[in-house]
Image (tube, rainbow, N blue to C red; front, top):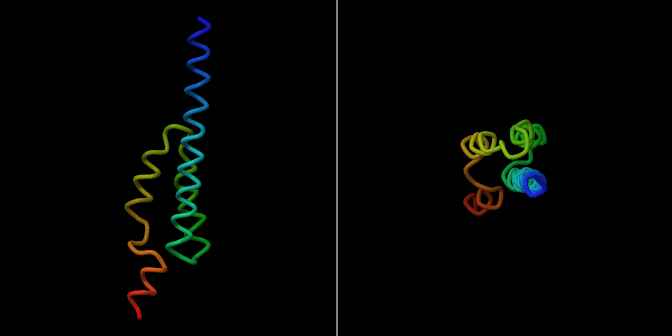
Length: 79
C-alpha cells in the first residue's frame, strides 16, 4: 500500500514536471519564431489547457501550426 502511494506521488510529480517543461519549451520556441504577442500567448495556452501528463495533443497541435522558420532564419534568408 505504501509503495502504491509513493509510486503515485512520484508519477504525479513526474507528470507535472513534464507538463511544465513542455510549456517552457513552447514559450521559448514561439518567442524565437514570432514577435506577435497574441500568437505567443495562444501557443502557450493551447499547450497549457491540457492537464499535466495529457498535453501531448496540445503539443502536437502547436507543432502543426507553428511558423516554419525562426525569426533568425527569416532574417538570414532575406539577406
